[in-house]
Length: 181
Length: 182
Image 1 (cartoon, helix red, strand yellow):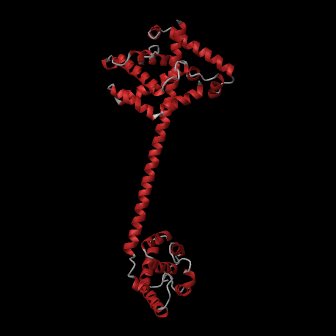
Image 2 (cartoon, one colour):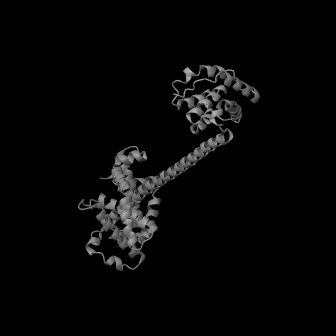
Image 3 (spheres, chains in turn cyan, red):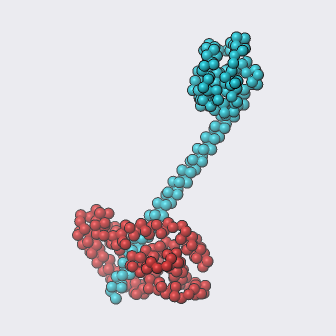
């Protein structure tokens, strides 16, 4: 009889132990669930913020630094140049400046990259050129462009830039553009 | 199988969502709510662990079917303790329930009284006894609790257990409750 009675005590002790094991599991599992939920929420928030910011910045550049019609692209470069100067002053990084290029065609990218070169946004220009089909012959065919662009200064006024681009137009009317086969 | 390995198996069973859902289906079919089902699921895993520890679970047939039968028994026990209508459960084949008739399921009141007695022994004594009851070896208990040697652990276990039995024996109401499960 005493043995059975003791057996019941042992059973109670076992149950208490097992309860502790399962409670600890449950608590760990809950903690994991909470951590995962927090991590998932943070990822969603970050992804949302990133997408929102990316889209917002691209949208902002698109609406504020609108690229003019391509047939007047050289003249447009002066406008772009001055606008992008403002963009730089506004704190747009190289990444921001290259972001918008995803919306440009090959020809537009060509001009856009040059303007960025002129504004010393070399990283942004480089990022854009890398995405183009003409990236391999850019530097060969554009020596003249680059030498001209070297004369552009960050603090050039809009009128000075316009004058320089008009000069470029006169001098390089027949310039072969790399995107034209 | 005892000790840490047994606990690992218990945890694994407890986190088996497939089995849990099957048992929850059974509990729900008996009109039990989510909270009671959670409690019964925990009880079921603990009782199954005890049966395994005692070598009373024979690995014959499917585990899910065995656990379902154990679930039936626990539901019946739940209704008995709650003094509710057990008509639906009586429709179950009796031999399934008989399989577990010798398994004592202690009432909350008794568990609470025993817990009080256990807590009176002090934290180390309590831990030693719980690990011992789960078939941890003296070396494992010694290592977990930082006791000097397995021999010292054995002596402490003996002294703690003796004290617990003595306390319970000197408490007629607890002993009377315990006797009901013999």
